[in-house]
Image (cartoon, rainbow, N blue to C red):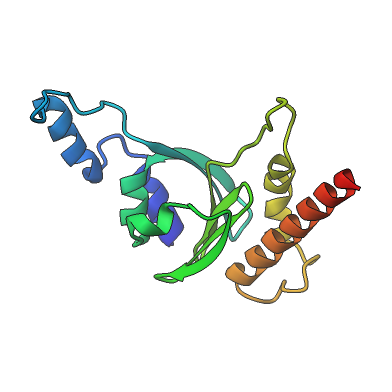
Length: 171
């Protein structure tokens, strides 16, 4: 399965995509004004749920993630508040504070904010806990359809309930 292959490659400490970074880090390349490149590589916290409802989480560099998924840097910018795009058999979603990449055999939540500004659990935490049962259960109208449709329905239902809760707070 693609998802298991990605997990295996991304969780290895000697991942081959980080070779260039290690070379840059060890050589201490300096620019004209002698500033050292940052030693920090931006990482995403990825929370995944596969088609069987098995959850896992890991950290991965942005470069490794887009190389493994066959995406471009532009696809993972998440600049817009709301967006949906289809790239290389993946569905990339951004709705308010939910960023997700839907593959054929898993859904990846990218840097989910499990706690809101006040420190209490956010709605995404509830969504994360319910997602495996939504994907594998028969409560969805799309239960006999491929994983992508089931995840899309769950994401849209989450987004609608989130917007409804916000509206009720404003009223």
